[in-house]
Image (cartoon, rainbow, N blue to C red; front, top):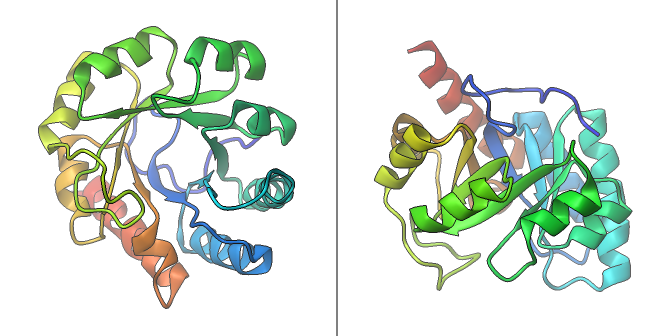
Length: 222
């Protein structure tokens, strides 16, 4: 399990803060490892393993490798959707969508120390349910058009502000976020920005990650 991440971003009780890098669908494990290593070198403080096209054995192999890579960078490692995989590879936690099982069951399986995240889309009602069920962070989005999830519902930054005023948990923004768009979401109260394409599709992954880190640093100093 990771301890404090390499870059904390905003202060407070958020278990994940700063750049939260969400992996692309890749069958080439060497390429995936190279890109994630570059994102961590650029300043990502957490990685979410999400691969919808890999077979279960490949998912396990990739997750184990990425877990060790994150540990070496003192970064948090989260598995998307799959509590069983998170348990099998001793991930720091799991992120669950509306159809991925209950947070209560995930807590029983993964233990008190696991980080549990929940997708809340554009709904404060769903966020309230997630917080009540023990979520450590709640994620809203998509805030912008997303190639990863082109049909995702759209959310407004005001949701972030409302959530921060109501609950003492981390709030994550997700969906089509670029470094140029990041300041508005951070100013609205986002503890972390979950980003995939703007980092992993970049020609220079480390530089792309660094751009997000620099936005957080600038906001922290302002």
